[in-house]
Length: 101
Image (cartoon, rainbow, N blue to C red; front, side):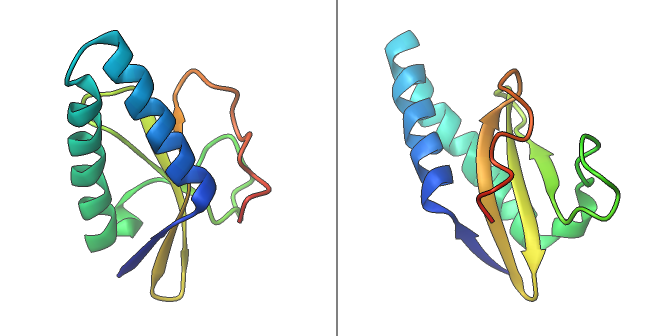
């Protein structure tokens, strides 16, 4: 599948990277590596990830948790494209990104 990341999600990735690097040198790089691995898995088999339980059953949004960091990749599948709408910290307000897609 093709993978497309919305600009807002790209901004979230960069903000997280910067924040983590301020916390500990090199942590931002580890975050990006963790994210890249998860995005690769999503692109291969996006249907293996569950739909968001905080939304109605007919909602198209799914989420994939990162392995190391407390972030979730929120995405939807549109034809042959995975559209990443958010890369959100798990303690952030739920569904703040809902109007992006």
